[in-house]
Image (cartoon, rainbow, N blue to C red; front, side, top):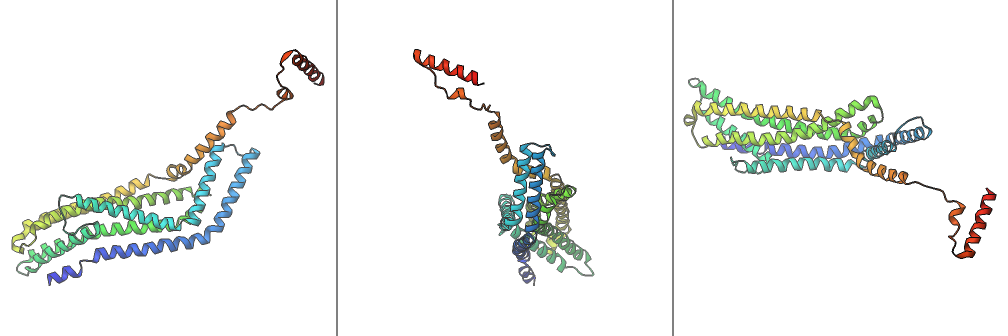
Length: 341
């Protein structure tokens, strides 16, 4: 009965995360494409009007700004329009890249852990194995319980509770981060429109902060989870194969304490991700996108303007005289030029 219980639930975590990744891939691509098709024409009109009005204002002296600022603004607008109209596949691949890097990080950390988890070659499998171990150990202790031994029931329930809380909280944080990241990328065309209206710049800043927070949430949760799973499995494997009487309260209480520690670590790492992501805004990121090209163009323009330019005169086209005859001709030409002036 116990073996059937652990085998039937052995793929819940891995299958759930795989299905969520598959659904989000289609959701991001289709949702982004649908929203960008509706907003492509309005965004193009707004961008064109914005650039034309800004250019005429600078030319007529209504707006005092440098060429570098105008180039940066134009490049940022062009980048935004490209992101909205042609970047559906980039957003999908970017999310795949983030998920792939985080999964690779989790696999490397699991492999580097001194506590080897058999079959835990990646973070998803490690979560599933630890969940099965909590289920198995809690069932062993719970089965000897009764009205004459209610302590065994309590120990079994506590093992299940902390094991499921640990894996469930980790699973919740990872799924929330994946869904939030996908949803934020889908809203990119709508957020791009807010860039052209200064009162809405705060929304753009919060949107960018949310993207950074979601990416950091996956990263920090994965790093913390590998440590928590290794710590939990270290004590669980000590009691692997033991009977309920051999485990006793002395074996159950340390597991509960470790479960509390692991849950606290996951909770704090999630808070840290939101704190770090909240410190990022468009003034830090969006300006850096165009600064490189704009500075290069501005330096080239400054070099051209720095070189003095003198228009040619008639004197520049007169050849240098040689010999007595040439000197006489040169003096006569100079005299006629002075008289003409």
